[in-house]
Amino acid sequence: MICGLLTDPRAPMPTPTARPALALLSTPLGRAAALALACTLAASGASAQVFKEPALNALYNAERFAELERVALKRLTTQADDAQAVLATAMVAMISNDSPKREAVIQLAESCLQQAPQAAPCHYALGSVLGIHAMSQGLMKVVGNVTRVKTALVRAMELEPQWYLARSAVVEFYLQAPAIAGGSSARAAEVAKAAARPEQAHVLEARVAIKEERYDAAVAQLAQVKPGTDTAVADDALQLWISAGIGLLGKGQREQARAVFEGLMKDQPDSAAGPYGLARLHTEAGNFTEAVALLEQCARLKGADRLPLDYRMGIALQGQGKAEAARSAFSRFVAHGRGSRNALEDARKRIAQLG
Image 1 (cartoon, rainbow, N blue to C red):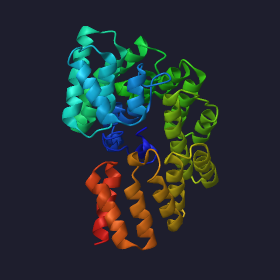
Image 2: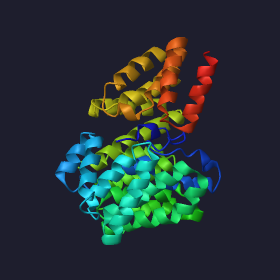
Image 3: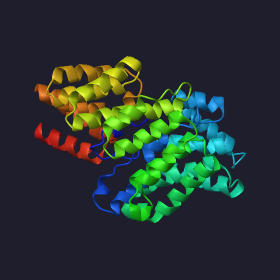
Image 4: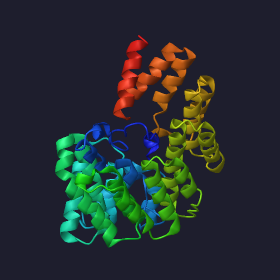
C-alpha cells in the first residue's frame, strides 16, 4: 500500500519512507542494498490479512498508523513477545522516515525472539526493518547486515510457509540481492511457485517477470489473479499492475500500457494508481493538460500520499510553460524529502532552471 513510488521499473527506488533508494545498484556490492526490500515488504500483507487480529487489521487497512503504533507499544510494555504487536510496530516503522523508530523496532523484535524464537512475525519484523535501516545508513551497513536480513526473512517464511508477507519478502530478497549475497532469479521463481495458493503464486511470479523486464508475462500472470478477500495479494497485485504498465510504456508499447492503466481505473476507481499511470503516459506524449487533470484526480484518491505527485505535477506544469506553479510543485516535493534520489536531484535542478 505504500509502493507508488516504486512503480517505475526504470527509476531507482525511493528513500526508506517507502522502498529505499537503490542508486548504488550500479556496482556489485551496491546491489546488496536491495536487501532492504522496504516497500515490497510494507506493501504486502499476510495470508488474507497482514495481522491475525481483526482489530489490528482494521487500523492498518484504515491507515490509522499512529493509533496502530500506540496500541502495539502499550501491549509490548507488558508482554515483550507479543508477536502481533511487534509486527504492528514494524509495519509503521517501514512507512516512516524515522531512524530512531526503526532502531527501537529492531530492539523490540530482538527482545521478542529471545523469548519466542519461533515467532515468525518477529523474524519478519527484524529482517525487514533492519534491511531498511541498514540501507539508510549506507553501503557498508547494508553489506554488513545482508546475511542477517536474509536469515530472518527466510526463517519467517519457514515458520509460516503460508504467510504471504514473509514469502513476498523472501522473493524480493532473491530478486534484488547480488549473487554473492545469495540473490538468484531462479531461486525467487522457485519460492514464488511454492506459494500456498494460486493467486499468491501468480502475483509473486509476476514480480519475477517484472524484475526480468518481461512485462507481457507479468500482465498474463496478474490477469489470473482473483484475490477475493485476500487484501494483501490484492494490494501487491495493484502495485505490480502499475509497474508492468510503466514498464510497457518504457519499452514503447504505449497501447498495451494504456490498456493496463485504463483497466486499473475501471476496476479500482478509488485507487490513485490508474490515473497516475495514465498521467505518466500523457506526460511522455507531451499531453500536459491531460496529465495535470489526471494528477489532480490522483490527489483525491486512495494511495495518493505514497505517489510522487508533486514531482510529476511539476514536470507537467513545466511542460505547460507554467514556471511558477511548476517551481512550487517541485519545491513541495523536495521539502517533503520522500522520493527516489534521482527524482529529488532532478527536482532541485529544475527548480534552479526555473529561477
